[in-house]
Structures are given as structure tokens and as C-alpha cells.
Image (cartoon, rainbow, N blue to C red; front, side, top):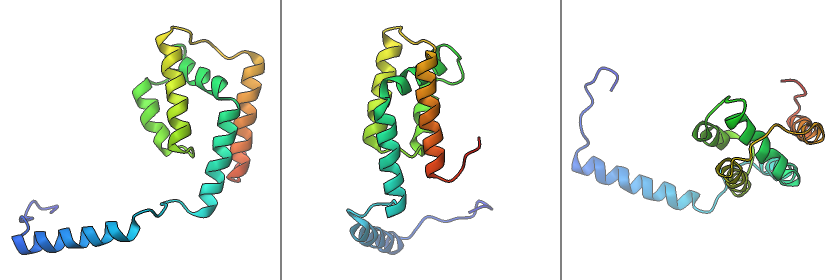
Length: 132
């Protein structure tokens, strides 16, 4: 392939590949791709985020609108690697969209910033890293 010499699959090879794919999908259907430990950590991160969802949404809205550190699509894409469930991630981005569309993005108050910092500290603690 790297040399550009890959050939198309023959009909028999294509049929065999599709059969293997079907078997693989059957075997993994309904199974989580996350380990039990990661699922526990994800649940804890979800709870931490949901506890300050409005603050978290304002933080990200301000990063987009005020600080201009990233665009909404960039952050939404990057968030796919965050330890959050898809449901909580969707709730967060819905709130961010609402804030942005209403033109309400602002810097966090000192109290909100303290809540956000504490959430980050607790998340880092979960994963055993206290630094950046």
C-alpha cells in the first residue's frame, strides 16, 4: 500500500472480509469499549461537570467568544477525547451553543472560577496527576 501497489480485493476476498466484519460486530455488540475503572472515572467526571454545568458552559463559551482560544467546532471535536459520557458532553455543548447564540458569553466570576478550578483539581486527582 505504501508503495501504491495495493490491488483491489477479489470478489471472494471481499466476501470473506465482510463475513469477518459481520462476525466481529456480532461479537462486540452491546459491549462497552471502556474498562470498568474508566467507566467509574467517567461517571465521577460526569457528576463533577453536571454539578457546575452552567459554569462549565460559560467557561467554554468565553474561551470561544472572549479569549478566542478556539472555535466552537474545534472544541466540540476535541471534547470527544474528554472523559465525559456522550450524554453529558451533549448537554454541555447545547448550553455553550445557547450562551453563544444569545450573545451572553462572559468571563467567569471569581466564585465561578473557583468552582471550575476545584472541578479540574478533582478530575486530575481521579487520574493521579496533580500537575498541568
